Image 1 (spheres, helix red, strand yellow):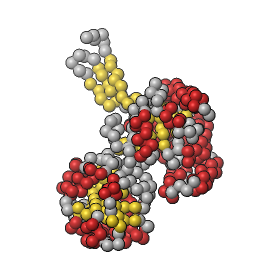
Image 2 (cartoon, helix red, strand yellow):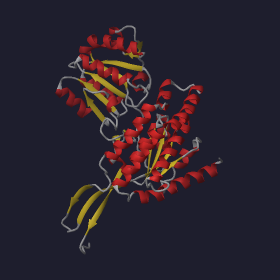
Image 3 (cartoon, helix red, strand yellow):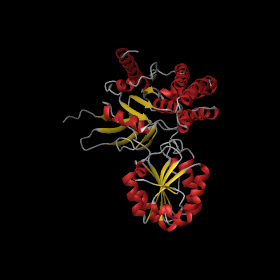
Image 4 (tube, helix red, strand yellow):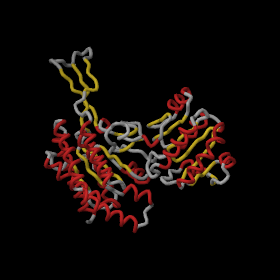
Length: 420
């Protein structure tokens, strides 16, 4: 496909989504729920076809030498398809934000004003690797009354094509307006650049993937962009932490799924508990295959760990690698996090409530945790059904983005002849 044909195709798809968004915004809650439930059932019914095409992508990824963490993110199986289906049904069961009255008042002018939640319109969703994200994004967009233009990564092209085909067939039969879910089938990267210039057709771009991709989109888009740059998350073990709890959280935050944005990349440990807990942790990390890189004080406690360099404190490994720093005070921990962190997920483990509140109040991040793993920063865990992404920006949404974050507001003003 030459550049002119590609541009024309993207414009046609975005225009169709824009037209569909007008109709979609007027659907009743039960109609949208019926569409989501139909898609959920169709995913399970057609799982063999989806897994077949996913297998093609996995084989190609292995041949291309992609990392194990990337292949894991790409891989679908019966369990993950069941989770995709369940996620859609959970979104269907959630309250519909569209039409919600956020505020209601009558000012001195005598007019009656309501601030009401409305769909954003057309969401351009650009993502990498994880084909299960296709249904998460589409489901949330549709429930919030938005059309969506999906552009997945080249490594998941066959999986995404199969999933969108199943989705659209099921949704159309259930009453979804034609064109509401668009899928950009080309793997040509020029398609992304064409998408993010269509500010007359696409209302919001949400990228989800690697730091470089997101940086490129932020720099070149003429459409508002909502995203996070990278996920450089910390766990701070305070001097008054429960050792057993701290070990459990620190292992989970790093090892449960190291290739995702809310996995821990740097562990901070108070000097008064480091001698007790660090050898135990390093032993567990070694057993889990984690390479630990430590500051000079950490190396004195556990000599066999690797020397940490300055760049380690600002590196998102997305793998079984961890940097460890011993700190003298909670203030030093907070300073380190605010300096090097990405503002996504940060956690303190402590039995001291005042220390916990200090950390929660002073750390600048979208989600701050007390005695819990950073891995819990997730739409499903937060009871949002699923998420379209996590934002580290502060306008208009921050943190895990669910249904309400996919709406805007408008004022409905009722008068009886008032003029100015």
